[in-house]
Amino acid sequence: MFTNTLSTQFMARLAIASVITVAGLTAMISNASAATYAYVDAAGDVKSVVAADWKTAIAVAPNIHMHSGVMLLTTAADYTVVGDSVTGY
Image 1 (cartoon, one colour):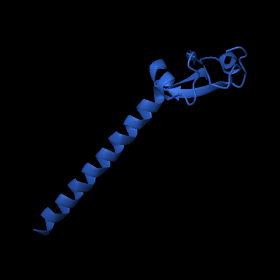
Image 2 (cartoon, one colour):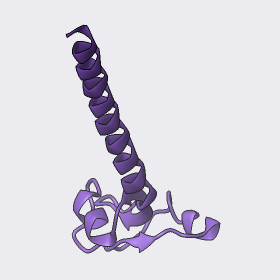
Image 3 (spheres, rainbow, N blue to C red):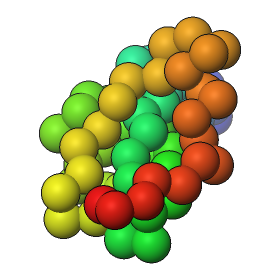
Image 4 (cartoon, helix red, strand yellow):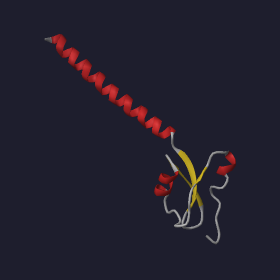
């Protein structure tokens, strides 16, 4: 009887550890597929947002200007636009 209790406890702990491991790996994979995008906010400032794809970037970009799109930032030169201002927008 005592052995079954230890075996049951071990299996329960193993199951919990497996769930935690899978959840952690899923979070790492989803973050690994995220990219950084630039957009223009309502004040005309170029900001950045991290998202899984361009559609999500547009949807979650805070205070995005109604005519702004997003630009995928892939090189160091791309990142230099963040912080700029756009006039006449």
